[in-house]
Structure formats: structure tokens, C-alpha cells
Image 1: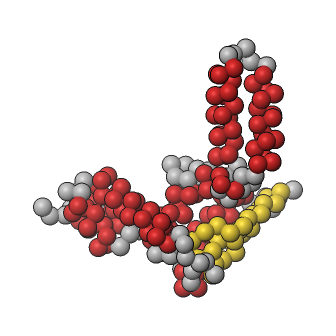
Image 2: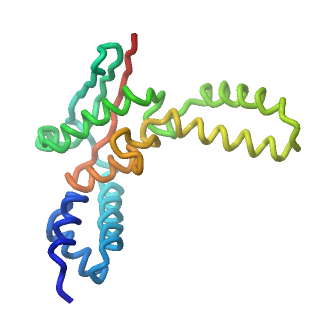
Length: 195
């Protein structure tokens, strides 16, 4: 079966994967665009997993200042080589991370970074709020657990939906660019300022 060139072009544009990878994915998916896209996404995650133990010594600082000049953010995004640090897609990604930090005001890079202290404070606040409700204890416990999970997601940069594409989290965007550029990329630090 021949490959539809418009689908190949569309897949290439949407994923930024190499043409050969797009062609291979479409072949494997029997021409089904959605299946091919999932295959490329899965392969990108496999690249991320393989590269997760590598050391990141290079990178870039990125910043964003809102047009009103009263809010901004600075981020440090790390990669393995200066070649990738100079890549236009990487530079754009670093800017998008800074924009994300400015817009969403996260407290931690990932859910794994959320401190016990932050969780304990939020749990106490939620328990006080839920105690006022007239519900069975097991229901209250599930409400507390659900609200704590939501809290962890809302304060973790990697778990937040992208400002530019709400269908994707920053963690997914990081996996995508890692797959495209073929290097381990990680968010180092960030800071947000507001007047």
C-alpha cells in the first residue's frame, strides 16, 4: 500500500519527526494517521527513557516579561550539548517554559519535587474545609485525597497544561522535544517575579 503524501507531510509538520520516521510509522500503521502519530509519540518516549540517565552540562537561561512589565520569569533548561542549546527549537522551548512559569506560577518542577511540608499545609487546609461537610468519613477521605492530588498537579510545572496548547502538559512537550532533538533535556530551576 502506498503512502498518502499529504498525510506524510501533515505527520511531519505536526510531530517534527524525521520524514523517514513518519514514513515508517505510516507504513506500520497501515496508513492510519492517528495510529502513526501515536507510534511516533511512543518512540519519542522511548528515546526519553533511554536518555534519562545521561548528564546535562549545557543549556540555556530563558526569560519572559509580560507586556505590562509587572510579571516575569526566568528559567534554566539543561541539555547535553551546546549544539542542541543553540538549536532554534530548543531556544523556542526554553522561551515557552519561561512563559509557562510566568503564566501559571508553579511552585515545583515536578510532582516528585513537592515537599512534605507543602503537602502537610495543604492537607490541613483541605481537612478543615472538608470537616464542615456533612458526609461519611470514607467519602471525606476520598475528597481529601482527590483535592491533594489536584493540588500537586496544579503546583508542579511539568503537570500543568501548556499555555500555548492546553491539550498537552509541559512534561509531554518536554518528551516531544527530547525525542526530536535526540538528547536528554531537563528543567533545572525557575523563578517568577510579580509586582
